Image (cartoon, rainbow over all chains, first blue to last red):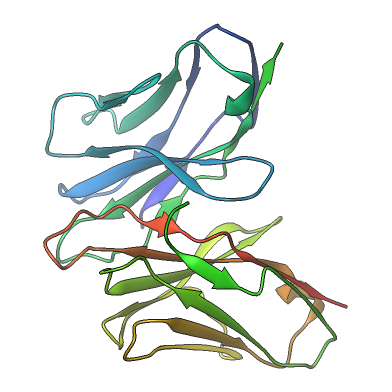
Length: 116
Length: 115
């Protein structure tokens, strides 16, 4: 079965600093996609960043970047220059690629608080 | 704004009742997914439709059913409601299977409270 583990239930960071959220996953498939979603207090699920498993280069979206270690099945999210608006729950998720189930499998989330 | 719309935003109903949640996907997306977010179970996949046909089923109770209509909007029907069905229900859509990418875009959710 595919699983996603986020080992940090809660984290906090000072504004303008950098924070890294951890995620590990388990799958026997080789073709899959990884995502980080953000859920602010409004409860909206917002896609932050995605990574295709076949790509070795780590994805980057502005202040958000990932460290994808395929052999270790690790997919951490780094937030640089943290802002108050980054306060949210962050969910790591993955989806199998073509031919597999397209359902998103989510971790339990990490609650991030950015302090002024 | 993800482009996915859901109605209603909030729903309060009594045990034993039936409700219908509605979702319109992003323009051009053929796949619609339903997820349930509860405090104790986290985010759980319920069901997926692709161009009107059921494609995948997750942890969906027999009391729940869904469908996708020719205009691609989808409805999730919840019947014989129990207190434990209180949750946030999300709809998401994607272009997977159309040569598009696999990321899913979520609607704002429907908050269901069963009293």
